Length: 145
Image (cartoon, rainbow, N blue to C red):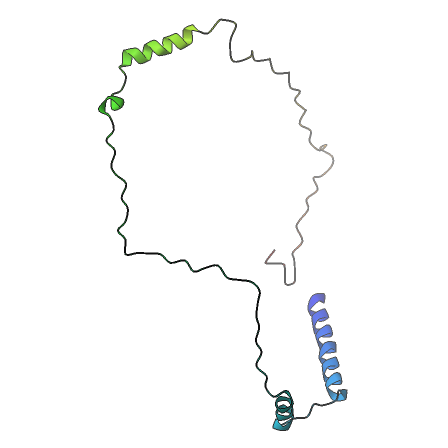
């Protein structure tokens, strides 16, 4: 577990550096006198921030008006009547009659080339088959990944 040892070692060094810097660094004055000296010299000024940008005008929705309902349109009854079946068959026949024998939309299929099949080869009988096992994984990432 080299990663764990690395984190423990580096963490220990950083903690020791923190204690060392704390021991040799100058200390700030404590108590309310330092805080009072800072606020009294500044006089607690009020900051006013202005901007040249203007916000868009407020949008007001008038909900007192009634909802507008679109008028109903009556569809002509003649448009809903389906065409007779005989007329539809005649139209289909007419469309097929316009085709010429040479206007075949599909091109002729080309014959597929012959495929070569490779021979199945196995190990010679005098050589044993080699088997490899997967190595077990240890550490933090062995079970997750």
